[in-house]
Length: 199
Image (tube, rainbow, N blue to C red; front, side, top):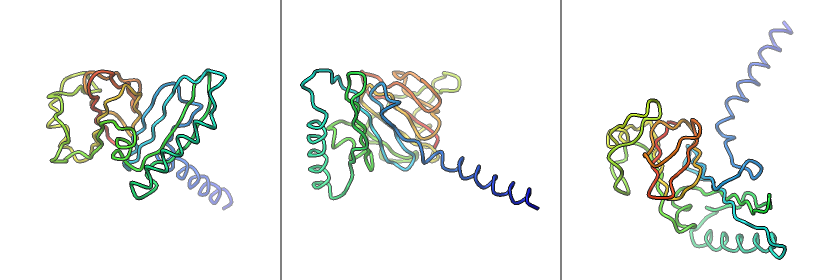
């Protein structure tokens, strides 16, 4: 009987651990080596930037004060806590900063960049997309219009040469991107990078 109860508790614990893994997908400064954007399946965005910060007169506290002033000003104007400073750390002669955003709209507005993040099946695509995307499985070209109509998929479009991590598996991408892992790719410095993934 004790073994049965113990086995049941162990099973619940293991289920709890694996069930939480998706929610635990977060960026942290110790793992960041390049500018990185994380797109979560719930629409939230996390972005890490790495900037050279190797002069003696550079002050991390002053940088944090400046960033917090910008964040507070934006949040007040946008009517909520839409941007949050997660971490700011000096690392290997660089300043590594991680910010969280409640959605792509706030990421784009705060950083004054163009980006989009939407569900498949969306009839109003915010820009003209390439005619074809690359199928990660076999490298073949697939029709973009067909792919983005799948309501089970999410589409992310960025215009920065970031490492991009998604909360799922990348299925298709524009031909200017380089796959690094099943949920990570390197965006292009030239043109928009389109990523289609399954959460």
